Length: 428
Image 1 (tube, helix red, strand yellow):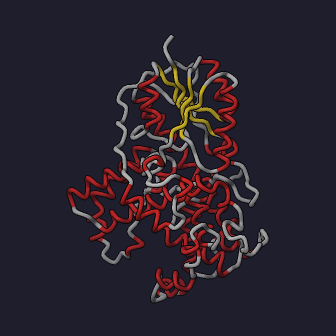
Image 2 (cartoon, rainbow, N blue to C red):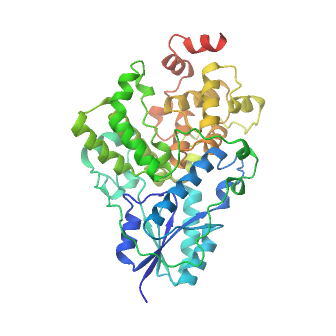
């Protein structure tokens, strides 16, 4: 009997640059690709929000469907299940006589706890859970410092990493795969089966964001190769408005950070270095930074006081002000416009996020974790490290105190709308 390996997909929904998949194919005679919809990802949180809202859930379903179609194109399929991985994976191992289980390791506490539970359950069957790390531009072993010594100040991290670390080449996209024969490959659930409220009934997802690897690669190509035309056609765009909008596909692993990097290098060879290329790299470095900070500090980012032990202990007050902020009904025109965009599209750019977060924390005086939890529900590009790390920074309780004191609502407002033109249009 040949060796069979289960490949457990999580936030790595792609075939390109996927070390876990490439190694499984090379080490096994057959692989069993699996995706599990964990009900814990769709439950209500302690902050009166949902862990995954309708827009993000729809994007996830599209991304899983895209992976399924890619595997079907190679003569196989994706086994889709709903339930708890620590219960389902051991059952699959026993049923199909699998030798190992491969997966990508996460850095946040809840996701890590699931991995530990799976590992413990598999250990009872004498089966190994092999961990891979494929979510960052730089592998941690290629950094110029161990995790415990990574600089807390982002500018220092950026300078030393860009100077002394290397970005490895991408793993080749598999062209042939031998699959385990499954009795029943399951079905991707309907969105209403995942969510606990009726929000999905009226869901319309902006066509700009369609989940999946194919859409991710297409969007990357268009941005890099039509980017110059886009910017010339919109000469009035400010620097903060020139955004790649790749983050949603990066968050679910439909797109590899290294694929972005190397495709950008190819584009630079054609067009020369462009300002918007620099913005891409900066965004990837910020993603890496917060993931490594989570690895270094664990769950500190989830606590209201964060890294500032003398921070004000604000109550979790579910007030009308908080509700108004969520609904885009604060009376502050630009904040309301951005919150409306967040609620309908599941996306706003980074400076817009800083503005609405600063308004909640600094103007309304509301506990920042309530805002972070709402972003977790709404953002299609949500990932724990970037979301909670950025919110902690805005709230002044992040690990880089040089950044944490730099957010001022009036300054951000003037930066985004220096002449008050937006407010005038709204009032008109």
